[in-house]
Image (cartoon, rainbow, N blue to C red):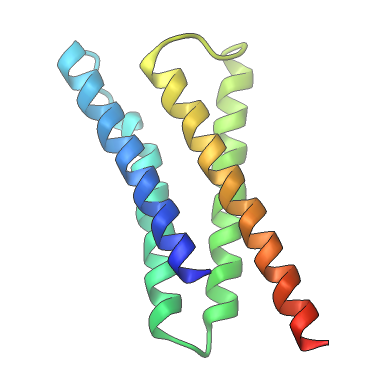
Length: 120
């Protein structure tokens, strides 16, 4: 699971950096384009911390899922407030971020359920 957190964090960092670079080249760059990257950095840090520390691994992975839930909620809230998804780069990055976080959450829940079943 920590490896997944690092992997998905890396994907989010890529989405943020590519989105910002695209907006920069279009002359519409905004720091908010880096929000997916910020979420990705935090997710990757939690993943690396969980890889290195066996003791708090469970807590760190739960924190990663909470971060993913909050991030996904923010992305979905943004899409709802704008009335849906248009074909703009910002909207595509927002939808991609929400999708990546949803997949991470689903994989994390599956992992948590498997770990729980293995203990019983």
